[in-house]
Length: 337
Image 1 (cartoon, one colour):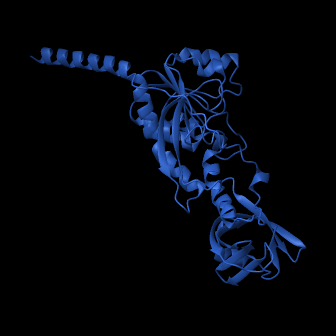
Image 2 (cartoon, rainbow, N blue to C red):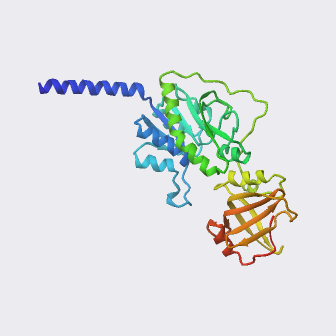
Image 3 (cartoon, rainbow, N blue to C red):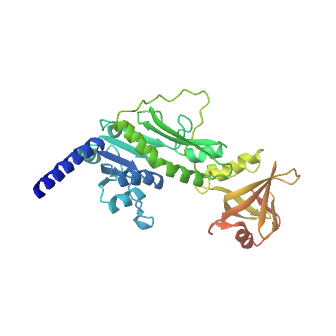
């Protein structure tokens, strides 16, 4: 009797293993950021068959050994990983082929050459943080807010030769709140990312997808990489809304900044994270700073005032407006430029 039960258990276990292999193909996960970590965790916790991970090389000058969050997770969970400097390197490609992946999943990584994305028989798919074809590029989360959009989302698509142009598998839309910063929107999209990755993968496994070409739209908006010079605030912008959107679209990273001038002689760099808008007609010069009380600081612009809530003086920590005012010794004749 006991032998029979044990035999049945073994048969059941064997069947489960067969079903496991059928349902869960060999996956290589490719990513580098905390955003991509959410998807990796979701796949790993749901016991998908991750045979290997590709992530970026270390940054030895940074704290905590300069490991990417993806590498840290791989080490903690004993998942094999590769960190190629050159994605066309023979050693890297040889080891990638050894993994013999059925599918590759890419979230927040650099451009892959065809030698990499074309390897798996089920293809390679990417997660992009916008509703493609709008906002192709490196910084979609920042640009949708900078441009004052009221919605965005996530798109999964098969990787092809042309960057961000592959056939769309799934899209999930999300509303952008009026006062939302890029950091807040990123957190919202992070929480959605795992579920769309799983849903996309399941549809591919079950052959229930109908990939669609990206629509031809006359007016496309792009999301190019943002450089430090692009983050300087133009206070003479005729639209107070545009100034506001730029600040929240760059908050907390890479951060909008300006130069704070005292009597046109001394100046310091000021990063601005959170502000409010005050719409009001006035005749003050653009960029004049008013310190009204111990916790009110506003900057004159064409359509009113930008009221600072949180900022950071160069060399100091990010702080609320009260601490910012306390740190400024000169309280009059201050301008931003």
